[in-house]
Image 1: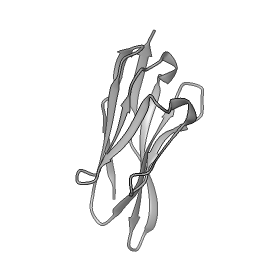
Image 2 (image 1 turned 30 degrees about the vertical axis):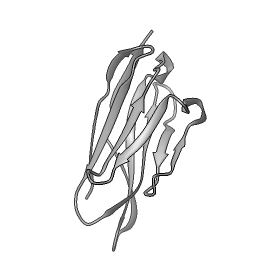
Image 3 (image 1 turned 30 degrees about the horizontal axis):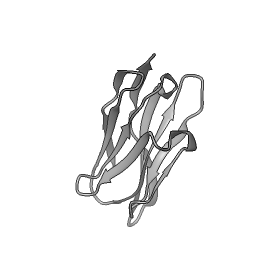
Image 4 (image 1 turned 45 degrees about the horizontal axis):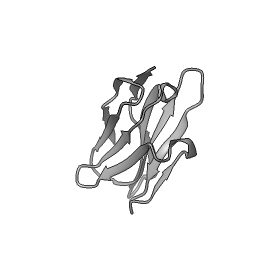
Length: 120
């Protein structure tokens, strides 16, 4: 079983920065892809950024240049650095972790979500 603990959300003024963290814990699995999604009120959940085991990254087009995803392999933690935040970035942010286990195969896990609110 994989547990994900997110932290780092909060209230920030437009133009400010926040750094989200998501730590994975548990035994008997290997972490493959890690990523961040967000869901604003009344909207579908959307991909923000992802990072592969090899460190390759992908971003939503509208967020390139403002958001940076990274991971600490030793800590099984993925980060999302968000700069130049805009009110439209307001959403609940969820981390997503894909793992592989010997007998269970590939599985997908979601964090509990952390609220990011950007005031104008």
